[in-house]
Image (cartoon, rainbow, N blue to C red; front, side):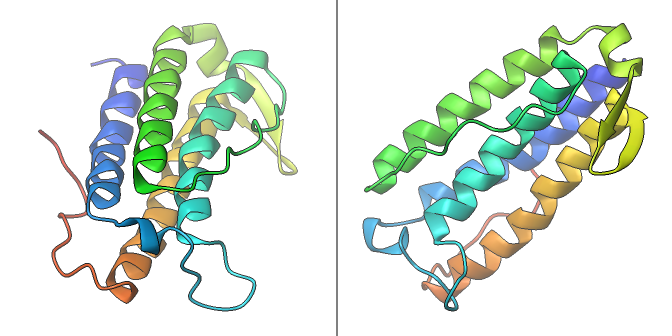
Length: 152
């Protein structure tokens, strides 16, 4: 397995769980904030999904590329559609990256690292925020949550 395919497989094993959590949400949950100034639940989900796309676009371009503006969603169905669309787009972008792009050194947040290391950091970022999403889901009353990783 190449380093790229291992990264994509590992990332998708976490992204599948994110999709499973979103499936358990209801419309009244998407605006939930556990404290003043927190991201709303839908904002957290969209932050997670757009961030990996930003990391992949940065590797493709060889320089920091800001994420696209997050769409405003009003229903869980809109959230699901957006998450699915961003997942497909990011997976395609990751699959299109070349070995040269994965090996190139990129400056990001004051650090210099190969593209593949930046993508691994992006996966770690997603895992971190997915943990927060598990807490949000529990706080809005979701009783049954998936295991933290889905290798199927």
